[in-house]
Image 1 (spheres, rainbow, N blue to C red):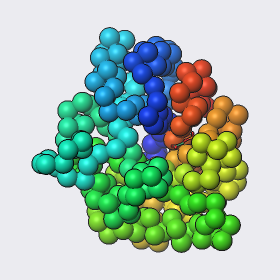
Image 2: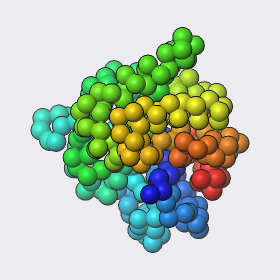
Image 3: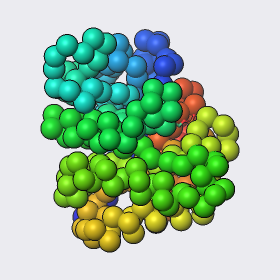
Length: 253
Ligand code: PGA
């Protein structure tokens, strides 16, 4: 079975109704391969706007909706939180989890990330599990140990078979929003390591899991990155806020 490829826009705390309208309009003529999903992850208040705009443009289902965060709980007294079941009601298909901004700014641990992955799967949605090392960790040759330590607790929480339903985004933290991209060779090498790590546990799952790259993906480097054997797409931050650039990146997939 061919692995799915994904181009995911992580708008972070940026964007507005106008950007959703402009992006959907620009994406509508784009002919994507049936095995490639284009996903927009706007801030939570815009989830329903996205649905209204895609419906009006007759594009429901063509572009998928993703959320940037979710609670590990199903419901209850957790002010300010949103559950995976709530996201599902808004036709969300994918949920980002473990992004380095959540880990670093909001102190989200790997254990919490694993619980969130489980909550997302329980609601029938697809987690996009972000993992990655800092610059200091790469310099100290700890990349593989760091990635393993981020993946193993998730596998322990959900079991290896369920991991086949997860998308893994490798995002070297030093490349996020910095303009410093991992070279396509370096990215491929790390993706290959991740796939091999999974293959040592379960070869079928390792072949099925889409591994996407994130960190300063732009119109210049996207084609080379996406051409690598173990890179199944990209998680795009800054460049996904510019309609023209995002279209070029989608076309490269
Ligand atoms: P960037 O962000 O493309 O702006 O580096 C990627 C991300 O944080 O997912």
